[in-house]
Length: 539
Image 1 (cartoon, one colour):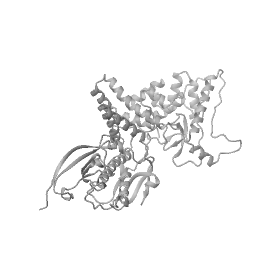
Image 2: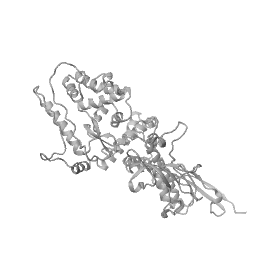
Image 3: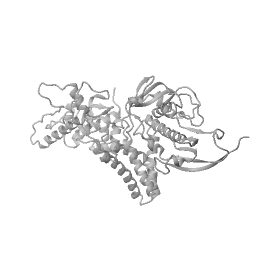
């Protein structure tokens, strides 16, 4: 079966990068795209024609040669740059191909990628039939982690790098047409006749990868956001409205680039996304939602049920600041979800995902139902934050307000609460400083970045760089769970909760300043308005 044009184009780009000894970062800068964009085009989202044209121009070949596949593209690259034997070297590695028949002098061949151990590989590591470029070092790798081409350890990356540098030095120093030998590396070096044991392979894989210092990562994220605002103002000649319009338009690509910066050398790559169960996350039609119930609250307490003395009482409408920004700290699933039936302790197993549950009966009029306003009884699909909220409310610490939910089945994978932590903390810091300085432009820009990220990271046509509807549902569910937690705190402190709605609306009667800190920070609340109610004496 013939390959698609997109598959051929991706193969051409991978081969050209290896042949020219360039990384995806170099290519991205050359064609005017963010660093993360080339990796996403090669892994998931399709190349646009104008982008592919720029790639072809960068390598000095015709776009049609780029679309034709790796053999044709590499042969064209070699001819354009007067390196016919470079094409022959590639042909020797990939099989016979139609290139210029004229004989030419051989040059040093590119080093073979370090061999990965075939035995005792963990479940998240797969062996690639065809070597692909490692997302960390940009050199060929024979393994993939979480579905993404990558060496299994920092040592393997270092060996590939050393081998590539050695081959380049040999080719540059060659003064005679004598063919250079093909060098290969293997890890680790052992005495003659001694084979590496599975335990040694495992020790190599478990060595920590070099990480960027936390303070450095945070500083780069903050500097990126501030630089965007400064550049927008500079380009607009100081016109704040024009700068605001530009930043609003760039909020989504800036959010994705900020994630790329915040995940520098991180263990999990958020570019790749696994297949998800369609019966949960896929919308049956444009007018109908998918099966996930996010537990959005929309509750109001009747005045008659309030235990208040007759007279006039003040109702304060409180607003939770940066609700979605705070909700970015939640347990996000990472890999491909696995199906289980019956009870699962996701907290102990460090897993997250979607769960089909039957919630316990709710019999309290003074507090909203934690699953929100739902008219249909029976099982429903909820996300991890909602499940954890229901489990908390069933414990004696929270007064055993309901029975624990009955879990029928789950789709979960390993999770982490810190995947978006640098992303969140950078936005929080820049927002706080903007509020302190009265910088409305920066404050609104920060809000656009995180709110548009949450609204488009699922299946939105406005953001093709990340397709994780499970993340969007988890973040939104976390925002509603956070609001419910504020309502519980108010009730426990003796306030009367009279309304809980959306992600940030809480109405209470009583001295709320003794319970919450007032302000505009993400850990504070502000009063939006107040109204009076009159409780009439009983007849």
